[in-house]
Amino acid sequence: MQAVDSEVSRRKFAREVGQLREIQPTLISRGWWIMSAEFPYVKVAFATVGMRPRVIPFAVKADFSDYDVRPLAITFVDPFEDRELAASEMMTHLPRLLPVDPGIPTEIAAQMPPQRVNLYQHYPHMPTMPGFLCLPGTRAYHDHPAHSGDAWELHRNTGEGRLFALLETVWRYGAQPLTQLQFMVNMSLGQSETPA
Image (tube, rainbow, N blue to C red; front, side, top):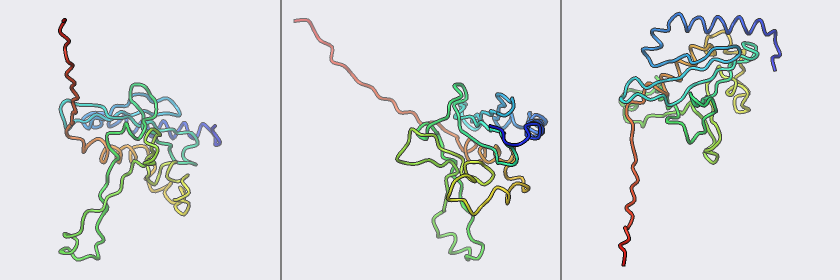
């Protein structure tokens, strides 16, 4: 349900999608594929250009309803079936290393284990439920009660919630680092019965 003037959201949708189309050759070289763009949804698939065979592990669907009074709603979807991916289906949780406090001396910082946060959040006890992009500038982040002190209005004019910025983050931590596939093969050898 669109609460704000839909023409405002439509114009912003057209601007954001237009900016992506202007740099489409660069996006293609990174493995980004704009699969569809019809208000209020944009669906972008991410291919793994750093490995062979190349795969498309996921697509992102951005919902521009009420944008930008509300941030974009970002969901991870199967690129071909257009259904939300369950946490157990994601090839990555978009791990991001946190920066080291610059006040810590370099020799001590070098001995510290790297701290990381997963941008793709899910509830471990519910692996069949979809996860969400836990990042300022997304609807799931700002609607979550744990982030009630970090309002969308604080980020709205910074560019964090713009379509390209969110897709860039998903690519940088989700698709770009995928460089190899691991296969598991299960084989069972059956006993052949010989006639008596």
